[in-house]
Image 1 (cartoon, rainbow, N blue to C red):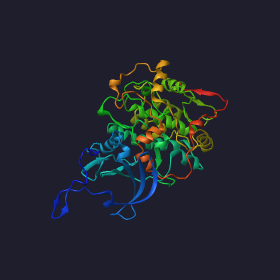
Image 2 (spheres, rainbow, N blue to C red):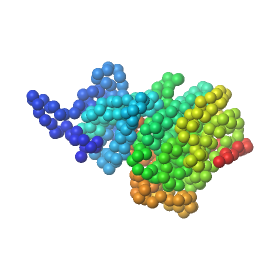
Image 3 (tube, rainbow, N blue to C red):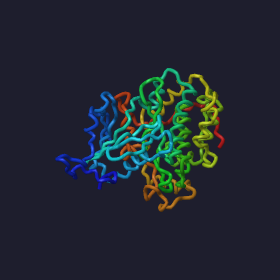
Image 4 (tube, one colour):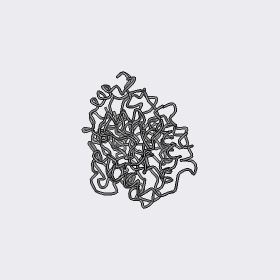
Length: 416
């Protein structure tokens, strides 16, 4: 059965005037495939040039169906999410894929899936080409960086996620590694990528524990039904890191880390937060509120003075933030290798989960789990691999580099 539910097998053809009339166009009909950009667990990403518009470049992810076997649902989910969006909104664009007219997710701060092709052996995803590199790398490279810069970045993320939420889509894995710069230009916009764990609200109850440890919301760890608010929490975590260079929650012991998140325990440590405005701290508290009913929505966050007004400071905080980013993230993806079942058992033993959710309510798997970064990349690495790295160096494992030097100064404790 074809991956996308329609019979696109090019071996089945009809003849009309001696020509194939029903054969769908192939990727080679429209694009010239060029050099390799990256490889994944069951795919490769190549640069592709449009045949119709010479010089127009894209990224094409080429997925081997044989290697994909057993993981089709993850890919179909990502494509379904990117296809699904209201035809009534003025921000939604229409694009013709290889078989039919389809409505795609269109927002200036979301990496776009433009077309899909399929043949007997492979699936081809034509992606918007993103060349500006990862968020943290660019901040470290800057000579100057202020609260206002962080506010502008978060505003773009909020606008994109607000648009997604309007369309009934929850990202569920917002983190710095999924925030990419569109181009190397100094004034480049930020782009949200990787929709492999995204979920449409009308497709069932969301209760599965998924995401990246450290950015996941308390209600996800508690195995309670959840919704759009989990994305807002993650944006709060990202905002915190952008202003100090280290994560709000950290512990070598997984159970302790989860306990911190479940209680919403984080601090504004001195001296790292001494020059950060009270407005920024209030903004973070509103986003990282354990009580889901009191937590800001994206729309409320966009109206906060730190985003919409002049509350964000213009003082240069680059030195402190870049130093901490290099210490705590080391230009790498935060990898926390956890056994899913062991994690749940650990939480249950420590009575941290509160009211559990039966497996019958789980939306993806029979047992809840936190997916690690490695697992996410194996099952869904579409846009992440469609970006061109800014350097050729290996990404160091930051799991051993996240112990931050917070000094012995006073601690300005968060009041939840």
